[in-house]
Image 1: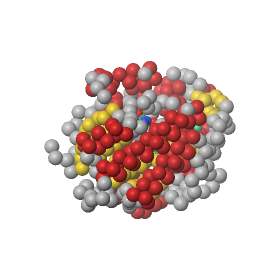
Image 2 (image 1 turned 45 degrees about the vertical axis):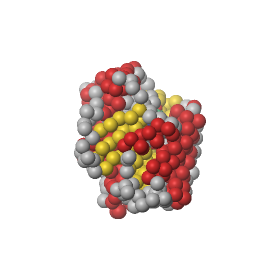
Image 3 (image 1 turned 180 degrees about the vertical axis):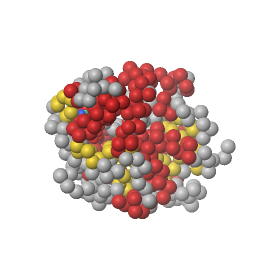
Image 4 (image 1 turned 60 degrees about the horizontal axis):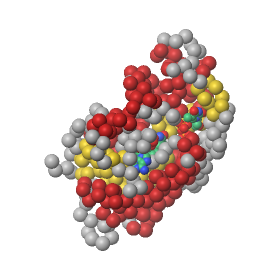
Length: 359
Ligand code: NAD
Ligand code: TYD
């Protein structure tokens, strides 16, 4: 089959990446989607079991630190677009293993930039590719922490505090440097906290849903008054689609839902909704809330000003927080098998079962 475009999506077996892969595979049957992922603990191919037999989908188990393998994939598929989501993504893990974040998020990203630059050969011959584009998916955490008021805009100075956010900030700088130095056509987006189906249960919302189901403590860090700006993952995926196709080359777009919640308020809402869904008496789950030692370097507040993407590209979230959270809870309650296979580690066998373990 002749495809109109080939898009390489890195980190497509992860939480956000799997939603992006599904959106592109189903919305663009004339695109070939190559999902490149190393399948770390966070990579779960079961996230894509509903679309992995589609004729326009290919999976490649490759680590972005492996430059030879990246070259092989570029030579084999000749992608004219990259959407780069592969990363180490959990702040708490970055506090314990910062170097893993430097390797994947910084060096891995530079490897990928190099490969795109070399393969697209932009400066030495007329580029035969159809509108090549390197899209780097980043986070609002690069901007640091806000006080009680104000928003992160695309002009906010970078001020990362955790090893995770420092590594993402560094990768953003490299992406811009490849644009300015080599003319690589890039676009970057910085998004707020995502939530939704297939979220690995070590992050706040899925961890707490799982703990409520299992009647385990809900560990709230510090005073619980930290504020995050939450966006439903499928809305992030539609924003990525917009930015990839319509964003200006060299530009940055902040993505968020103007949806700030203090952690403790969010946890109480989650407890109430879970009690309703589980048929528990009101207040049953709240007793599980346990204040624990704070995360070091914990950013007080994140809040995204998403007016640029709204005004320039016409994107806005499709669901309210209440709708998205209800959908998320329903998904976890009706996908107990997914949760069991993730918490037990069984999900890691899916690659061998489907692909015969070939690398
Ligand atoms: P995730 O941890 O769920 O998934 C990351 C994926 O990358 C996994 O499938 C993993 O196997 C893969 N990966 C990790 N190291 C790799 C390597 N060396 N080579 C190839 N693949 C590798 O992360 P996520 O929450 O889906 O986040 C995706 C991207 O979006 C990240 O770049 C993250 O910084 C960014 N982001 C996340 C959020 C959020 O709230 N989760 C918000 C804004 C931006
Ligand atoms: P998290 O989901 O780890 O995302 P991030 O740190 O990237 O924002 O955490 C969201 C917020 O919830 C953050 O302020 C830390 C807090 N938190 C807890 O209070 N308890 C927990 O067990 C976790 C995982 C997070």
